[in-house]
Amino acid sequence: MDEEYDVIVLGTGLKECILSGLLSVDGLKVLHMDRNDYYGGESSSLNLTQLWKRFRGEDQPPEHLGSSREYNVDMIPKFTMANGLLVRVLIHTDVTKYLNFKAVDGSFVYNKGKIYKVPATDVEALKSPLMGLFEKRRARKFFIYVQDYEESDPKSHEGLDLNQVTARQLISKYGLEDDTIDFIGHALALHRDDSYLDQPAKDFVERIKLYAESLAICIMSHPIPDTSDSHSAQVILPQQQLGRKSDMYLFCCSYAHNVAAKGKYIAFVSTEAETDQPEVELKPGIELLGPVDEIFYDTYDIYEPVNDCQADGCFISTSYDSTTHFESTVQDVLALYSKITGKDVDLSVDLSAASAATE
Image 1: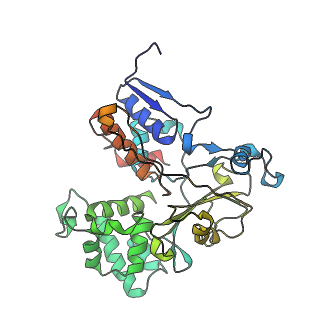
Image 2: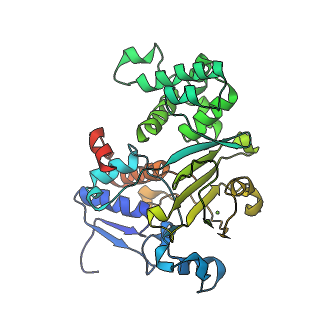
Image 3: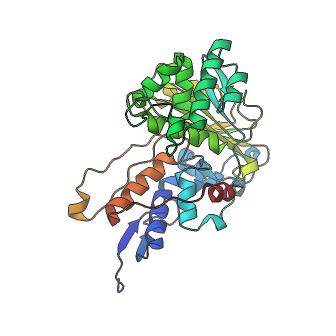
């Protein structure tokens, strides 16, 4: 290489592309490289032929699934929260002009063997079959508090310092039942386990507000049952409902999103492996899908950096997690950016601009 660069970014996955964009916007000279002959790295999208070759070792998928080029199957499928970190980063790097977004049809939670739509506001809480009459009233008061809460307005805090009060203490104020806490914490706040309960409540409340404001692989010929025939949906299966240590996630999109042939749906079931039998672990989620045309299982290791990045100048990202959204992914990238540059990214964009970017 004859030229000198400030930073060399290896890989063309989503994380690497976001990091490269942030550094470039800052005026740094970035060399972006990949050892593969295709884009995307771990988060690449495969057509049907590529999918078949990867999981079945063959080049010819069955004809009844349609044309190979009509498929774009993401190996790390995730939703974008409309007012979340990824949208803010995309606006900051000025790439939203090249993208199109499509709203998700619905978000659902698994509770006592059935799928229910997730209530995200006080009005939806009153209509939800997830709760009894008295619990609905308690939940409504909680949602009103969350919706009205503004960090800059002490009057909306009701005397609570959410940097000191834990999520468990805040919830106990409203007397919510365990099942209600379960779907609020996992399907709304999108926490992966229950450790959040003993952490400051500020992050918990902000996660719920983000959700409200935003409102392993199966090929199927129908949408996920009990999701109102949604072409795109996420279903959260909280750990306690399954007797597990970690949540399970269902992600579905369809031909309406140009990822499959006409009439076909792509569904993903993901979780953190707790045994060496993924087929058995994923069974509760797969059973919710109904009949499937084809199914593929995949496992991958999750890595975290252990090097001293300040000493060797090598900044390594963590692996993608099993969640259905990009929030933790972007948080990892922003942490990398801060380590490299010694400063934080200013993402204080106008929320109306973020909303407009998703329309």
